[in-house]
Each structure stands twice: as C-alpha cells, then as structure tokens.
Length: 83
Image (cartoon, rainbow, N blue to C red; front, side, top):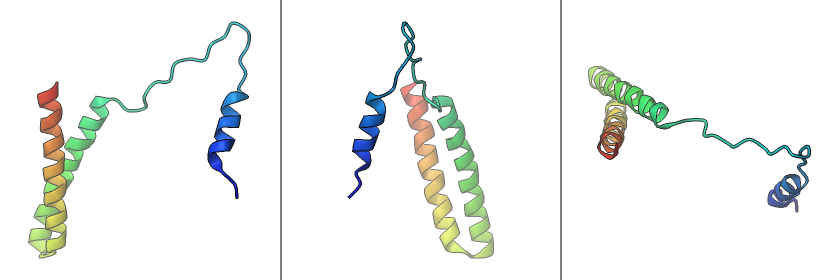
C-alpha cells in the first residue's frame, strides 16, 4: 500500500538551497478582496437564478438561487461588520 504522506515528508526533508539563501515567504493566493468580489458576483448570480426560476417555473432553480443569495449576503455582511 502506498502512503502519500510519507512521500511528501521525504520530498520536504530533501529540499536544498544554496548557502546563505533562504526560501521566500509563502503568500496567500487570494486575499479578502478577492473573496468579497466572488461573494458579490455570487449574489448577482443568485438573484438571476431566482428570477429565471420563477419566470420559467423551475422552482428548484429559484430555491438554489435563494440559498446562494442568502449565503452570499450573509458573507458580505459578516465581512463588512468585521472590518
């Protein structure tokens, strides 16, 4: 049986750098602004799902859009209150 964690630990212990050179700090790929932008975009998509679902009588789409809109709105309010 092959265990991935043992392979990762071997790779990390065998990494080498030049003398006097330290590896750079790892930065996050996405910051708070990116998540807020995604939440606003999700809110817009959720509202569109509700409108399209009600208009076409696909109520599952309206329910899905309601959940997406509410969760996006909750995240936006949480971020704005914490900041």
